[in-house]
Length: 288
Image 1: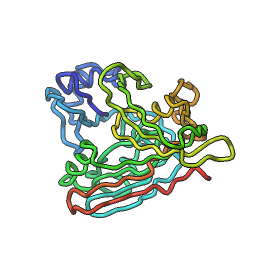
Image 2: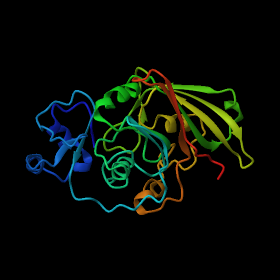
Image 3: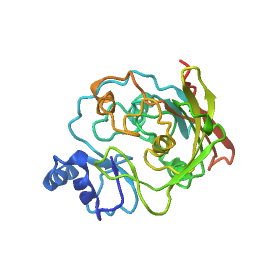
């Protein structure tokens, strides 16, 4: 799970997490003493430590029932430092909440036989496409900083109702906030923190169109919200513009028939180690 900035300590952040509501302070202290609360490298986490920035921790607990995600995760690139995959829909990036085994991180660590594999960034569980992992802890920070400092060009594709007025493109700028325990992110007054450029690329005969989405920021559900705000919600979206309770729980019930038609199509950046331009593209399309 990811601890958010706010509570003063790791313990307080864990106690505030909705997914751990069944665990008391005593439970958490016992698990920490047993070495069952660890960081990304498997090192025990100190419950009294501060949380100055979002940080990932792993809490070993009873594994929930999970339905196997029945889609392959092709490897697009692998070298000594990186492994890049084409993540399928419904597969979480890393363990969180009810998703433990069925995650891209667990698949890769198992397939590569290494616990040092770690994500350089994240994709929503329902979003497919290019996802980059590091293979050595020595290089992890350099690649994670690329994403944290917005030095990566990201390009997405989405399938949604056709709106010819978007052929010339549109920019959406607003403020998005996400509250723990709320399925949806929401817009709020204040300084804008979410910017997306969206343009219709190709109209189809069925009344749908393929769109290019260029996020300039990385707020939770940003692209999904911005598409809905333009009146062209992404096909298969269970949350925007309105919650569809059946669709929102489909994957958890083993129903993978209606994916969110959103793909991280392309990542491009200057490699922080070699200085060369690196580009990775998904092979996924909306034609099949």
